[in-house]
Length: 422
Ligand code: EPZ
Image 1 (cartoon, helix red, strand yellow):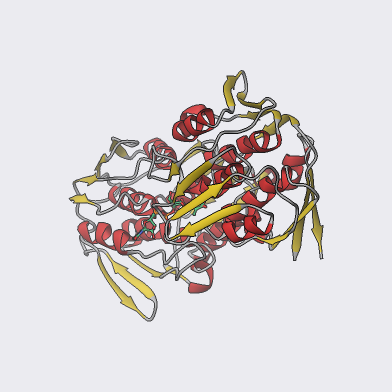
Image 2 (cartoon, protein in one colour; image 1 turned 45 degrees about the vertical axis):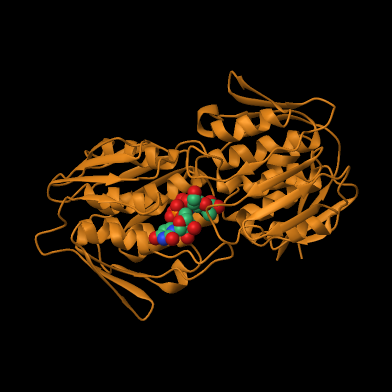
């Protein structure tokens, strides 16, 4: 199993290229099931989750080729076989549930394992089920699998209001509704940029959709969709993660291809903390001159609020900020597993339910720590950048799910980060 060694090495400087968005790509790939024609994605991230999704789509009979070292994903599902997503794949990657809507729309049925819990929470599927049942699907739970079936005459367009703005349920509803009979309206839809990117691709495929990025999305069903080529939007979570590197270690780093508009709430908090964020010709430049970082309160929210996927990384910055702050996690029920690991490094954090009170300390101390989930793992590397001594992060397979070439990207700006195999 690999580990990552990090040594505090002073201020950083240079450029880090930001890849295409994992969470956009994991929704875009199942869209190939909606058409018999080829769908090609460019600017795709090279991640283990993408490989997992590729294998899942292949299990339905789709052809999926990762070209140009994975930057291009060429897919075609002209004929589908099985419509079953097995537990052993779904439990590893919850995003496998994004095949539900497309399979129902294309094949009229789907058998998808419930994902089971994961490190950050129970991850139920009730909002997905309610949304697809609104379109006329019947969904039964049998032996841990959702057995979904569309009416013989196909899904029926319908107005539906979700109880919570679930990202995945929005994506499943929108994809299913593109081929439904009649018009559908989704209320309390999630507004994340990855949904906007999915709709842009579906529109290129001939879908009739309006309102993406707002809480009300209208989809007019069409007979069929055609193929397309689509460039995956920049990964705002990878972007925010690497923006925190100079914020924590000092110096100046430009995040190439970064788009400020994807992270407004996050950038406001960095500004409040005293970090300088500016638009550069080819991306975003983040500068931390000498002087301390101010503690700022953060509450995670659905987009356009502060992203839950950046909460762990922000906590790493707050560990050595001046003052006390409260980080509130409102999206997932158990997303503070990085806190005990940061405490091993000398952080002063008190967790009570969904609230973490962080009291800044002058310096963290390197220590052996353990990655527990994707975003927690990278927050430990960030903490190690400015810690005294060496930090060893184990179980970095979590990292490979969402961050390509992590050690290489950090080293490019002068950080002492090495990946070792043991
Ligand atoms: C997406 O997960 C992202 N994953 C997550 O990123 C991200 O944290 C999350 O959205 C929130 O922004 C992908 O896009 C592949 P939700 P998703 O449905 O769609 C509850 C990462 O690190 N809920 O918006 O699963 C759920 O338990 C990952 O890249 C229900 O109760 O998120 C959670 O508490 C982690 N019932 C909350 O809603 C449901 O049917 C948000 O879930 C669905 C969700």
